[in-house]
Length: 79
Image (cartoon, rainbow, N blue to C red; front, side, top):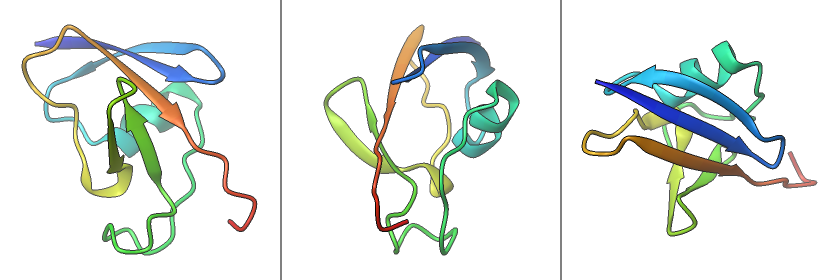
């Protein structure tokens, strides 16, 4: 199942498949999500999903059950 993903604040939209890693989707879209440990513990890749949930993109995939997903990127001046 294809999911339309919108990356904010740059307003970039791309289609992705359920289960596809979020970092790969972002890379295909030309969106940079900073990473550190790639294990979810450093939180460098933290993003907000649909204005409700904060996740680590390095250990997350496109979730099932949604036709659209908005990913809001954080800007951390320390990374």
